[in-house]
Length: 364
Image (cartoon, rainbow, N blue to C red; front, side, top):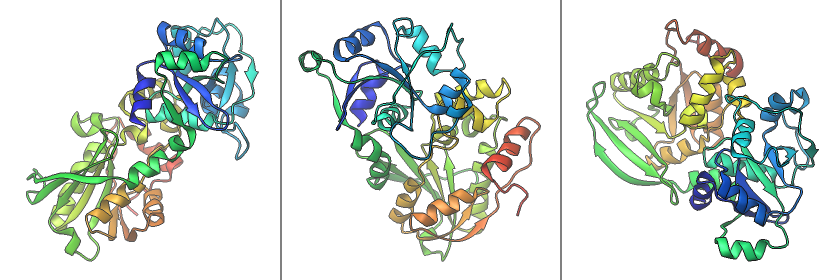
């Protein structure tokens, strides 16, 4: 899968194989070379596939804001790829609402391909905006594909990858790392088999010998954890959790490589730009074509079992984390509140957490 991700990121088409195969090219990285290769491989009509939430803002169609609950092609809206749209600058602006939009009239709609969900999922795995050019292979596709060494990836493998990658996590290294807030700490690194993604467990004391140790699932936040950003409460939560576990005598903080609720650092910065225009966290993510929360908490369950921790007290304000871990077989004996006061900058951010994500920030 990492090869398919790399191809999309460098602006090269890939073949999404399955019952109805598609030639794909990421809109965000499409350059002149990639567009030429796509045109040589693809049949007409070609389409630009967008997440429904992105298409809703682009076309001002409220009925696209959320995909239907079921039905073929429900995962995407397909726009006819005209010559006017098929330029790097136009495709980038179509994919990213933080850029200037150059449309003079709305593009025609096409039926969304059956494998649209897998097409957009592959772009998300690459941490690209979920917007891809798609078309069935053309009559010369086999010949051109052989010349270009076109990579093929099964659609079923794309959709199954997040769960399979989580299940395949392995411990690869560990060492004692005394911390400012917890001198009796060590870090255990976990890695997926076929990518460079690494998740970390900060283990304090001997939690496996505790009936129900404190555990926190902490999604990495470069801006908050490392730089001390005031836009969020992540750095405060991180350091507060470590101190509290040290005071408790044991605990595990899982530092998960799921920046920006799973959309990645670059897309989080794009979402910040939209928030500066008045959107909240949820609507900014959706305007980019991402879900409000794209994280996979099966990763955390696999890590806890590898650490021989099966029953926990979860340090969180997010009830969904409790439910997610329970669904993955981890017994959550109690939820421990982990709220911190607003700082004058993140007030709206915290209010959105409470109102739209259901976080319990009143200390309850």
